[in-house]
Image (cartoon, rainbow, N blue to C red):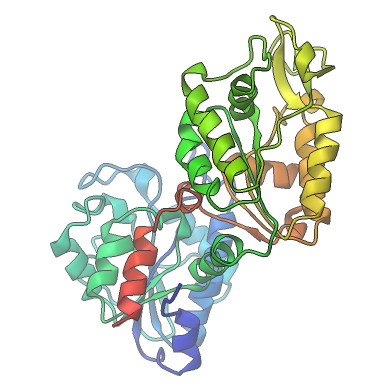
Length: 401
């Protein structure tokens, strides 16, 4: 995927003295008092900001935070906590907080070598609908627009798409560029065999992903409630487990599509069951054929886990979205742990994304053993669906002139 990269502009000496507008993803979690509880996204934004400052640019950064009402700013919508934390991380002269600017659409004062944070962009009227007049005003603020927020790349909004249309120069920041490279490596130019793990509670939420991947992957591992629907499609008992009987034909079509290509959807041979959905419910390992009418399937069994682990260790590329069991309950976490450890031990290039997946990676401490951890939930899922993200489309168009 051809896009102009901010790092290339810096290397070419084209950034010094320029006004640089960075769209970051600073939408961090906060407690009821407004205190930031986890600052990964702020830390992830710093390389781009430092790159611009070190190159001598006048730097403006903005992001959304929460779900404000356009045109109706409230104190809880403010990026003030982000400005404070960003300053602490940047260090002198910003240790007391990065300057925060409100009502910035009509003009921003910032000098080369300085950075300011522009208040919550989703408070501006027309942001979410990508209002052209708003986008043109924002584009006029800068010489270079840098998109560095993969988590918003699937949205065509004024600060993610419109400004890229009208800015003098539009490029990808290091975080977005890394996502593009990882996605290309995993899906467009994968080392084979390519295995995908798609898990979740419902087939309906990930049907288009399953259908898209079925055209490309060598193995499609399904987990969670999705796997139960596939078990039903194969005529196997699932007791009172979560499933979507109305989508059996779609599940069968995915299995058939894979078989036609000589690929497979591995169906569990054993599972871990319980009578109740509780952390302390007694766990029982059973052959799939032995699942009783009052059983809940809450994890894959050890035999299935071993089979999948062997396949993952032999893979060339792995795409991972979703735990294969109720990993929040320790009695039903062994399948997900076995999959996570196998990915960590595999020589394959691996890319992982989605909130539950990141939680599993953190739980088992394998973050340094995964090739790339995607920062965007919805954007990552849309890429797996085979969609072209709006941010990629407009940056690609601008790169072509």
